[in-house]
Image (cartoon, rainbow, N blue to C red; front, side, top):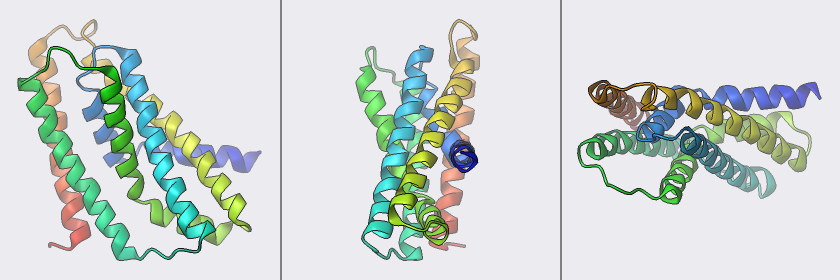
Length: 201
């Protein structure tokens, strides 16, 4: 029981890494409804868990070896995605659509989670392989870890959506400033991830 709780906590803590928080902050920054923001957080977590579980099946179940360089490229891809999210959020700020379907943005959150799952999934699966006795035990660990990350992103989506809620923050200029600042952070951090993983410095 203690091991399960520790695994859930590890997943929850994982959800609060900088790149994850920047991504979810960018996703929920255009939400006016707290329920929709929470839904985005859950879909992000599901997408993230799906990718890690798939990588786990390949590496644990089928003994498929994925090189470190491949995962570095995945990390760089996540950096590119963060840069895109930052620029896209600024674009949406100045050129908003009158009607945005909730299911479309939920799919976007799921897609962002899928891509994010590639970052760090290799290290996690290798760690699981080194500690777990059987493939089944390893895959169960990943699923439980995923549940923790889903809950963590649910909580993060809630916390980050609060400043963008119109009932709380009346000033449109202040809301726009928050969006621009968060977008710039997303772009800068994404650039840092790309540079570090492609060895450009």
